[in-house]
Length: 305
Image 1: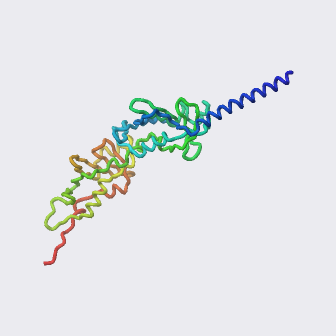
Image 2: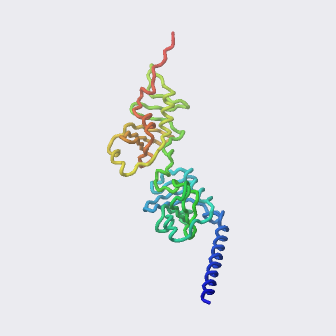
Image 3: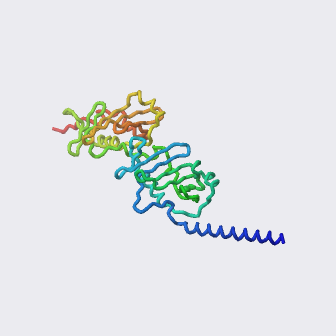
C-alpha cells in the first residue's frame, strides 16, 4: 500500500510540475515580442538618470530640442547618442527570460542592491520606468530587468549607452563657432571680415593678404573638437600657467576667448563659453599654436611698368 502511495505522490508531483512549467511556458510565449518598457500613450522621455553600482550618477535632461547635462552647468550632450539610447530602450522587445529568481538577479547584477547600471526614464518629475542593466552574457548583449518584474532578459543593449562618464555624453562639437564669425584677434594680428572676404588689418602698401592661409586657419579655429572633459585632479597643471596661445573671436555680438595649452601629455582648450577645460586632439592644437601676423601676409606682387 505504501508503495502505491509513494508512486501516486511521484505522479502527482510530476503532473503538477508539468502544469506549472506549461503555464510558465505559455506566459513567456505570450510576453515574447512585447515591448520591454511600457509607456502610456503620449508619454515622452525628457530626462534620464543613470546610476552605477559604485554610487556614481549622471543625469541628462531635454531642453527645447536638445539634451544637456545638469550636473555640469547644462553642458550640451550629444543628441544622437542620447536619442539613440532612448530609441534602443523603447524599441527593445521581451524575449524568453533567462531567469526569474532573486539569486539569479544577484548573479547577473540586476538586483536592487547589486547592479551594474540603473536607468530611470522620466518626464519632468514624473518617473516613467526603471530598469537594471547587468552582466554581459555575449557580445553586445546585457542582462536586463525592469523594476517590478522578476523576469531577466538578455537583450541587445550597447554598454557605452549606460556610461556615467560625462565625456561619453558631451557634444564633441560644443566648441564650434557659428557662421557669424567676423573678427579674430591673435598675438600680433587682427583678421576682419568684410562682405565675404577676410583681411589682415593695417596692411602697408607692400603687403597683401594670404587668403588661402586665412581660410585654413579659420576652418581650424572654428571647428575645434573636444575629446573629453578634464577632471578636477588634472586642473592643477593648467590653472596657474599662461596659455600657449590666445585668440579672441567675435561671433555676431558675442565675444569668445579661446585659450590653448600644450602640456606634456595632452593638448587642452578653454573657451570663455564654458567653465571647463577640454582635451583636444594633439594635431588640432599644433595647427593653432604660434600663429602670428607673418603667417597671413605676403609681399605684394609687383606689376611690370
